[in-house]
Image: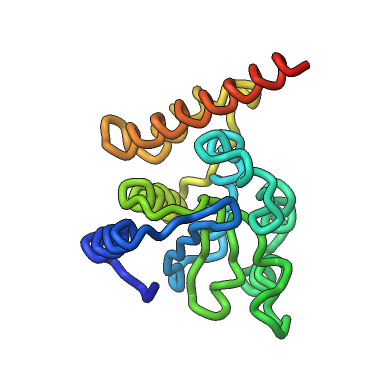
Length: 212
């Protein structure tokens, strides 16, 4: 779609897709772009640091097939390269493939894609599964936008979790606090997502155990 800031247009599109019985399948993804032309190197790094910090929790709010997908690979695979970039130019070269000749370079196939910055001035979140559900899409857009907002906060770098072994449910609570979205519809949506996919994973695990 063209760049938009109005959820009303998105809602109309989703309604039209449903009315025309459009379907998504396991091969589809929802890719969201946010304009970040004005972001400094450290602010872009914070986007990656936040996602890396809570990657397992974010994974738990999405279908299993979006966890280690070859079109949205884990941030943990690239985080050290991101951290080692001492300038914005080196960040764009090492992570976004600046100077490479084709847009469809392998460096774009991570949960966060910085290669789109070179072409459009955006950062792309690629992990979400395909959807035509307005509430699902709009809440994911809001969530990723909150990550951008968090990254722009002056003198507030992303600190590691005090306890890496806490449950994903507990990590989601930390996500909510760090993004300052307590007692909002977005918090409710994130926790509902977790409950939904946690139940699916538990059911699958029980089914496999029964089959054994």
